[in-house]
Image (tube, helix red, strand yellow):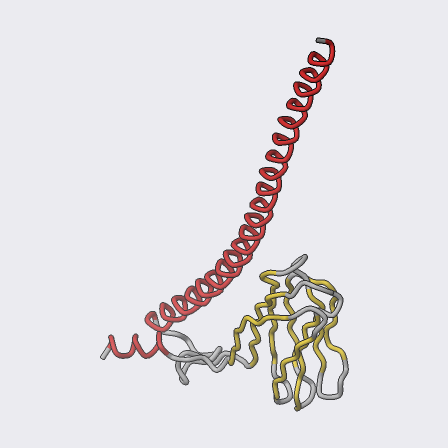
Length: 207
């Protein structure tokens, strides 16, 4: 029974609703996401540009009456929190309209709602048992671990993209240097050959 209770505590799903996605943002385009929220609901937004250009995008958030809640330009990453003052559809937009030829890859994490206790009987004024306290501590640690894993995945994806771009540039540069060396070598051989042919012709004329 104790094991079943512990398993229930660890597997209890929180009321916080979260959406994580990675999407392509073409050049000269804008993408928006919509979420209908109730009044007095807190939501959090985290985003980061994983690849493309200077790793920056324009971003803004509006409420149901099109009032701007957040507006930043050319950000590589950022976070934003807000508590709704009205019920309706909230809009989160990302713009790459300032870029003429580079598309971007953007990671977005959108969370809203308040986290419920692991058990319905657990409230802020309720004294927790030792088992409940341990489960709450484990739950908080697991959330930190999940956030850390997400952060490391984003850094790994961004670093891999930078490494691939650098490898591509080094490859093209090496290929160009190789072609240039061949051209210079052939030119030097032909130049030396022309010197000997001119000398041979002048010797034949004198005889």
